[in-house]
Each structure stands twice: as C-alpha cells, then as structure tokens.
Length: 254
Figure 1 (tube, helix red, strand yellow):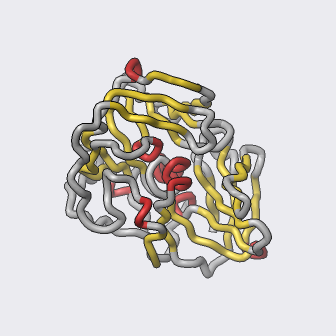
Figure 2 (cartoon, rainbow, N blue to C red):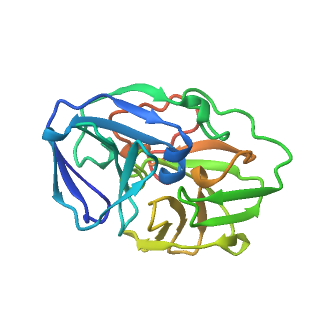
Figure 3 (cartoon, one colour):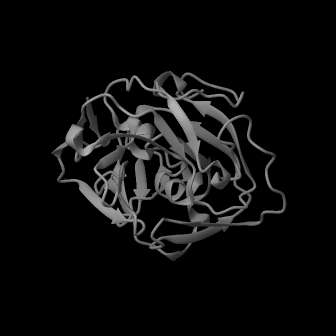
C-alpha cells in the first residue's frame, strides 16, 4: 500500500496487515497535527520509504521522534526509539486502509472544544485572550478570544496534512500578536497557503485564496471558549473512523 504527503516530497509503502488505528489526543499530537492524530503501525521490515527528500524528523521526547514533510508540513510518522516499528497516519494512504479504530488514546488530554467520542462540551466562558504555539515553541502568538465555532474538514488535503482530519476556526490574521515567529508556507491546490513550523511540523493556519483566514484549533491552549460545530467534506473522509458526535455533516463545503 502506498502513502504520501500532500506535495509528494515523502512517499512510503507499507505491507499489510496493518494495526488498527489509534486516535491520539495527547498535547504533542494535537499541537503538531492541529487537532488529533491517527496512527496505524507495521514492523520496520514491512515499511519502506520510496521518496524521502522532503522528510524531516523532530525529536519530540527521549522515547520517540516525529516525521513530517518539510515542504508541505504533513504530519506522517511517529517512531519509538529502539523499537522495530513505524507508526504512520492512515490518512496518508492513497487507497482505503481496510482497518478500523481500536482506541481513543489519551482522551483525558483532548482539547476542550471537542470530545473524543460523542457530542462536544459547552464552551468555556469568560475567555478573552487565546494563546497559541507550535510543538517546539518556535512560534508563539496570542489573539482575541473566545475561539468560537470550530469546523472539522475531512477533505483529502486536510487529512493528508493533519494525519487525521483538521479542525479550525475563523480569525482575523491582523489580530495575531506574534511573540516569536518561525514559519514556512505551502501553496496548496486551489491557491490557499498553509502555515506550519519548519522545525517541528506543527500546523498553524490556513490562508485561503480569497483572503479568508483560519487558525488550527489544536495549536491553541485551553481554555479556548470554542466548540466543534460541524463537519465538512465528509464525502472524502477516510474509512478507518466514524463521525459519532451528532453534529451537522456536509458532503462538501456546505
């Protein structure tokens, strides 16, 4: 089975059987992916990189490193140190994975704007300022709160980049007050630009071709005052997960 990042700078092959997916809600996965990250896995002897000129590794802890594309920012791999295994995003696969979801990992660390399973909670009150950052801390900013309505996007682009599906909220780019800024941008199909950290791969924002701007919900620290409100492009969702929160679902943009 073939997988790739959005721009094609990283291409890999995995040989089934694949481990059932785990959706991880830890702070590291949320910061890097922009929402939550999905992982399947195979032993290293059933994993092969066929193109790696875009691949960059970030040592996220003493126990594991995270692999992403330095050119488009796609969140692709998690490799535990000293173990004969590679975890990869099933959303990076170019064909149906044929697997399901086995568990919601670290659900207690999920963002306050959604629940790992079921309807999202009521938004936190009294949030007047939001704080955002990437995983490595090279990018830090604040902006007026609350986060407000959050939209989940299941299109192929967002799944390839996030490693699961994206969640973002509308904001004014002029309102972002950067304390530190170290960004790369990738021009996506359609002319939009996706901002990410070139050192750790964290997804930060999307600037559409028409000038509209949205921030990835996972890079914002709680409390956010946000709430997941709807799902778009569900016609493009991957086969390994279901949407079970009873929120409105749209086949495309609306």
